[in-house]
Image (cartoon, rainbow, N blue to C red):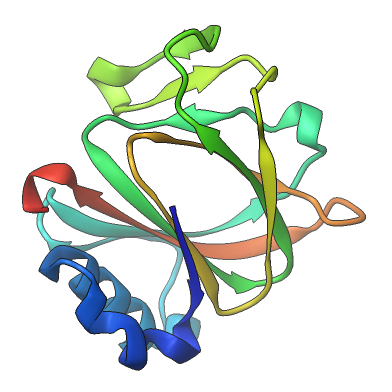
Length: 157
């Protein structure tokens, strides 16, 4: 997992592979106030962003998830959000397996060694396939946030 802020992208960009650089530059250079919610292709199905407003929820209601084919750059554009995260554990009980259809596995809530990351506007986290993440956890009370989620196919790395 990587955690940082859009304000530091220029100083940190050269640390990352080209595909992650493309995703981060899209976050830095895009005026999201002029874009409607939806999907925007950066490089076809291999690199795209999902933009939308979402509701936060209590930790117990948010489902831990992983992806095998894509990494996520989850960037908070508006509001406040917490994201739980932990190392992927093969013994973790699966709630629903959508790997073939959606590249998504949802786990039951009992995560081992889960940590909580609090995001504010302009901050982002990169989650790799080995990182279980539980997005959209509220910070104090349920609220609406706006996020950009960059999806990068692992074949690009």
